[in-house]
Image (cartoon, rainbow, N blue to C red; front, top):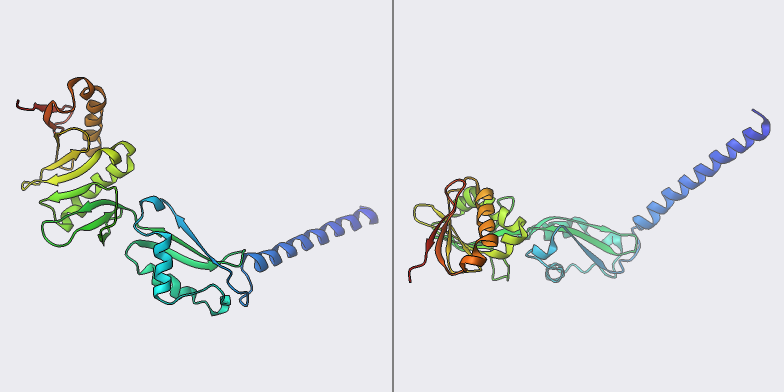
Length: 250
């Protein structure tokens, strides 16, 4: 190797070190502002489906104001990030939250909201929401396009027996719009009341719920347009591989 090639190699290493040093400097300076930088604003980021959540950006700002947390105009060194995480994280409609300064000199608050799958009206106690993890939270008059649960149902029964059905209804765009109400009879027979038509769908127990819904949907799409949506008073899907329809009495 010649002296010239050695020199070129050394210069390349020096250039690489310089670039690496600048990148480190840029990350420290711009991604994580110096602690004496003044907060220029608040950026709220929702992870997941914010449309199905029970808390809005306005709600978040209202909670901060209620606790007299006003980050704008303060140095980041004076902003208690852990307090913000604690205050927002204690809200029943918030799942996770983290606050940190972003590259624009703003306080970024990133949170994931709890998204319920059922609105339950138990026989005893107050109404509540049930999320997909089985967590319950108070219902306070929010306008949510959710299937409601009525009848012989308790909080424990909703968690153990209706959660799977709630997730199926929410995750399927068809049933999310079609399912209006779940009613549980005294014998714990699960009934589904759709938005379209004037009939009751009998699901029976919690076995094979996905297959039961599949058969009912197929009948809705293929059979109902010909028979008429008000022809039947009851559609029984609890028997494996079939539907038993009861004609409405005239």
